[in-house]
Amino acid sequence: KAHKSFDLKAAKFINFDIMADTEPVEEIEAPEKDLEKDLSKNVNSRKDRPTHSTHFGDQDFFDETTDEIGDATWAEVCQTCCSHDAQEWAYILFGLSLGLFFLYFFLVGLELLGTAAKIVGGCTAGSLFGDDTNPFSGLMIGILATVMVQSSSTTTSIIVTLVGANVVEVKAAIYMVMGANIGTSVTNTIVAMGQMGDGNQLERAFAGATVHDMFNFLAVGILLPVEAATGFLYRITEAMTKNAEEGDKGEKWAGPLKKIVSPLVARIIVANKKVIQYVAAGEDGDGNTIDSCDSFYPVQCTGTVNKENCGRVGLIGCDSDTGRCPFFFSNGATQNEDQVSGGVVLFLSLVILTICLVGLVTVLQKLLLGMSTRVIYKATNLPGIVSIIIGCLVTLLVQSSSITTSTLTPLVGMGVIQLEAMLPMTLGANIGTTFTGLLAALVSGKVAALQVALAHLFFNITGILIFYPIPFMRNIPLNAARNLGKATRVFRLFPIVYILVCFIFIPLLFLGLSSLYTQDSKGYTVLGIFITIIMVSIVVYSLFWYKKKNGASKLYDCLIRRQNRTQTYKDLPDDIEYLKAEVERLKGHTGLEDEEDKEGDVEVVSS
Image (tube, rainbow, N blue to C red):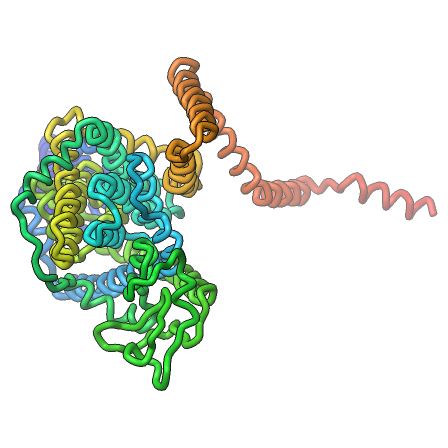
């Protein structure tokens, strides 16, 4: 109630000043409840308030910039959160319970999405890994593998395991980890598309999602050439692990969220990550050489279908804790059948995510309706270092940076969290996700695996030191994300194009191009050089056209015309119905008849 109390006092003061010279003092005394009722009635814009303060849900809520938001005190925040009557508390508790319900199944949807992605794309992702010394190939492999399995933690764990098994060298693994850092941001970009129904929310949500992308792209753009030229990450981590000794394998640690969400997911479907690791390593657990997932099919179980009685298991496995096999597990299944089941669960997860996202946003909007932006900004705009620590701790607990950023993305879309506050939380999530690799390295007990995990940690820390402390550098990823968000204004399907181009088409293109240089053939090398020259020429000309030939405004005008044309086609049926109604109204008003009716009357008379 802080904003209402503030507006109430200000309004009483203003009314007193205005009426002091014109009305008797007795006539200005009004009950506080009546004045509060008058102020809150039909007021949905800061222009209608005496204090010109903006409240959540106002028509001009998204028009207010960060600089225009006033500063509130923590006392106002506490009063807003805690000062309620019994009826309001009941409404709040019901809303929070409903919000937690949607949040739980939102997390279940994310877990299902990651599990299904591992089943659908796990074999392909596993076949990408190899001891490739080309830095660019390693980067692209990390991006594509993470996009396919929808988890940088899984990709990093696989990389660390391969390094521990001496399948991949540390130098090549460092570039793969950089790619995994980029690929992990595709999940919250998918979540941002759940707010396509509202242009304002989509713009802010997509900007909040892509701030993660922009930081990772920029960090890789700077640190990959530096690492290729100097090997500073390799040298630093090598010095740190020089005197380390290999020990016994440690125990795995699952975060508390896994224990809450995983039991329900495990009843539906379970991904067998070992198959991906075996395909990536090129041999199974018995030392047999394999080059695909065919060696794990068909699934063979004897007697009761459970983990102990199934000797050969494919991409869909059984729960390691309970031994129970999930609903989509099938004895005798082939690889295609498992992947079809994974595709069904993938579609189901997207439906769950969409429904829960809409429900969660609706509940939060109802709870925050009417709250002053000053109070919201004070509660969410924490100091940068605090936000980084919070993002790191939350990610450490949930064991996934995708979960952290995907949960924050809808809040950015609603305007609850500012884009400037999203960046440090994202950076903290980047650091938190490196602990998954560290834990995997400790489990493997290999020094080389620990070196890769430390390289991942120092890569993220170095990126933060480059882009966050200096405000000018901090604005580079923020402004890039804002511009991407604005692009959704003129092209609503831009997020889909962005994902397909940045996370699939370009990595595949560069992976294929870099492979031409690794072939022991002069013909392939010359072809690679020729294609590289063409691509560089296209990029240079595009930048020249965009910057010097007024390409930005031309592109914007083209998209605006397309949007207007689409909107015109969409509104055309309504416009025609409106015109028909107007014609009928005018005919009834004037009493005039149509020309066709008159001609018909003349023909009848003449006959």
